[in-house]
Image (cartoon, rainbow, N blue to C red; front, top):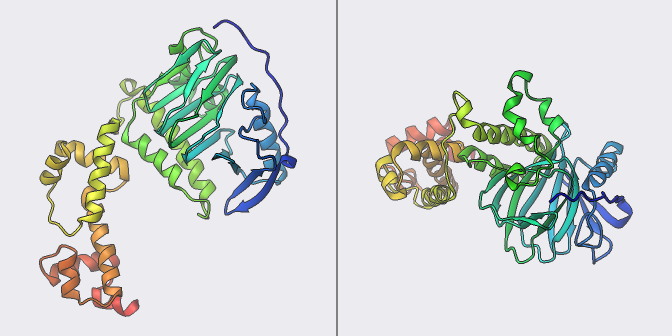
Length: 362
């Protein structure tokens, strides 16, 4: 893998796209229907994405587009966020690309990737393919190496990519602690895959943050702020997870994909069967975890405890039933309380009003 490719140049112009604003995001639709690739119309053409990023940043600075740009290509959509710290966030939200394959050269970019579903085929210089099953990785693209990807026949795909240069990351880390990020900036031109790909142990915090980023909608008035803050927190959690043995207090339970699937099934059950009487021991047996893993994993993944989530489902549905005119005693029973008194106290603690007062307000 010793060959260093000459970097091609590309120029991005808005003349090739029709632009419109959707909330906080600028939507760009290509005028040419054969455009299936952001770095040029020829999907196999290897180019330098640095020029593409530079051109987009210039357009953002000029006010021609917002700092969040969504490209609406014929077979998929992908979104770029140009963050204030110089980092670039790339998002794929449940896309099914049919024609997306290509390659490009890199100028020492590093990408934190969290794959929520579906993973592309990847290789360096067409001679070093890698098929890593890990959901979370740091990828060091090297200097002047040709990176190739293939997302054809991938199926549904969702992923978060935070792209940056080593020197950008170093600005956020105190000199005394920069050894924690040293692996991300070294051996960039090495010929071994392990020098380019760092597997990050997936924690519930990483999964939750990636999910929150993907679930944010552009009509949220704080879309840019939430996206940027969660992106930095995601990077922090990934570095903490990577160097967990070197940190004194991580406080994040580790979950594999199977664990996450079990917790998602549990959340779905609580969402639909909120009127049932559950204990933590019951739920632990149902999901196959001990109590500690259940409580810490659920809180880390969803930001609330099991009991808090169950209570929110009961109270939300209780208010809907009251709005529909159901009697307080009926509502109490339907949301899992044995008496109107205990239900009324719980309702007032949650909403600040009694059920009857709440109905009058509705």
